[in-house]
Image (cartoon, rainbow, N blue to C red; front, side, top):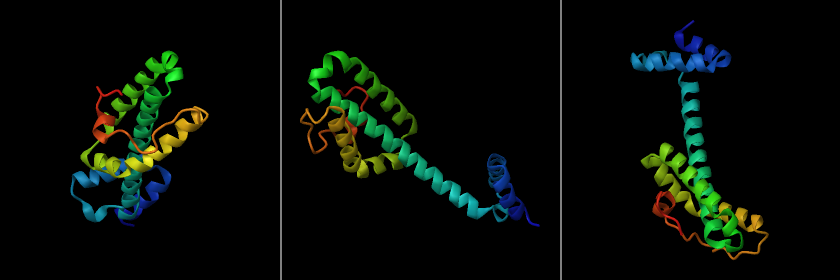
Length: 148
């Protein structure tokens, strides 16, 4: 039985130990010993998870910016909370953002805005006229000092 076969079995039993073994093989450039099938699957999953995370965080930033800017009836009671949330989500984005993920967000911004738009309309019971097109640039959305 080869190391790759043992790794495939290990993956089914203990994926964390499989990961440690895979890292060790990569460090020692033992590429022929790798369990490529599961390694590719894990890398694809990692990429999907990273994209989903930054997409969700950006949606949260947009939601709270919209509420802060347009839901003036609730602003007095909630503005500090919304600003705090915006800062939290931006900090989390900053920790995760790479050039590749930033480009991804720029390409997905309209879809992300549509989701945020639907959420805030429902949250405000359709009583607030939010803009149907995103009023923010990606630079504004990521800028820790930007508030409308």
